[in-house]
Image (cartoon, rainbow, N blue to C red; front, side, top):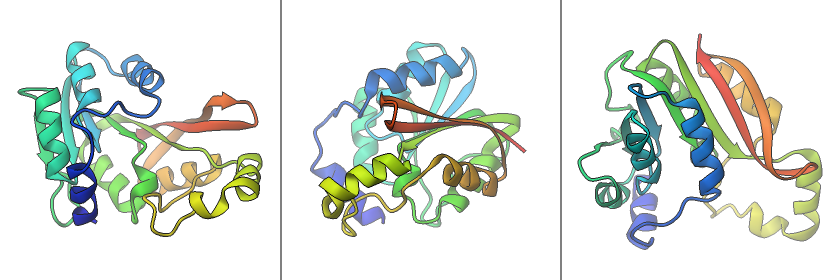
Length: 202
C-alpha cells in the first residue's frame, strides 16, 4: 500500500487543491477549536494542516507516503508532520489529541476498523472524530451503474470501500466510537457527494 501511494504522490502536483476544498475546510474549521490538538489523518499535501494552524489549532499531520509529507512540509513549513508506522500504527501517544479529522481517507483503506481503533487510541477521553467519505446511496449507485460502472468500481482504482449512511456508521462504531450523526452533503438531494460523520470516543 505504501509503495502505491509513494508513486501516486511522486507524480502529483506540488500543491494540489483537495477535492471540495472550500466545503471541507469550512467543515473542519467549524469543528476545530483554537488551542486544540487536531490530528489530520491522511494529511496529503498539508492544506488542512495549514488551515488549522491559521485558525489557532495545533495540528499534527500523518500520512502513509513520505512523498506526500515532502509536499506538506512546503505547504505548512514547521508543522508537526509524521509518517504512519509500517505496521499501521499512528506515531502518536495514547490520549494525546482532541479531534481526529479523517477526510476522504477511509474509502482507500483495506482495514478501516483498525485505522479507526488507532484513531480512538490517540484521542483523549471524550475526544471527537470527524469523518468524510464519498456517498453511495441507492439512487447514486444506480446512476453510476447505468453510466460509468466499470470506471467507478475499477478494481485497480484507489477506492476500496463504498459507503452508505448505515455502513459508515457501522464502521465507526466498530472502531470504538459513539456516532452522533451521519449527514449527506454536497450535490443534489438524491445524489449527494459526501457523507459527514461526527462521533465521540466511546
